[in-house]
Length: 185
Image (cartoon, rainbow, N blue to C red; front, top):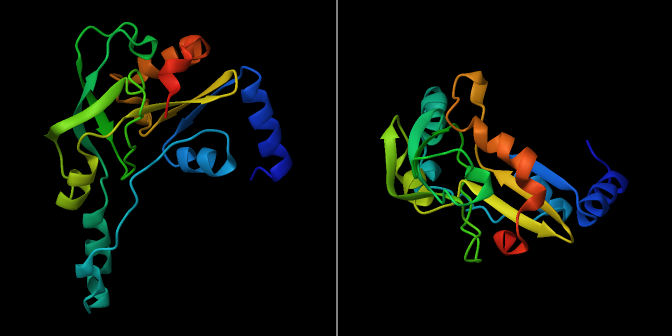
């Protein structure tokens, strides 16, 4: 756990030109720590969950709420440095969580987004699918002279999903060179 002093040092380092790369639940931590700004769609409790049910059904009910491994198509801006080396603007993304990132407000802030019908293979609950549509896979936040790059997915999931690994490498190598317009969130 990083204490307040550590958070302040990380924020100062980033403001002075550092690049932080975060994945999945780290986006919420980075936002709460003031190190970046990532707006995720919040879960709204289902009215159906408030109805009385047998305890024996808890695992099945909770399991149906999770997105535990499905493939979705995302639309890429191939001119963005984070997508360097990709040639097809339709990129399959492996998703294993219910983190849905609101699109950034800037004209160049959404290098990879899910469209209005992104499911390619797998299961996702309808309410989660509705929340996911037209959200961003990657967010970039300006912090002083630095950048915080956030991925809603583990781009190298269990070392078997290689299609998005290059985006992580691009964030490492080119993240500091992103124009400030890219991070308008």
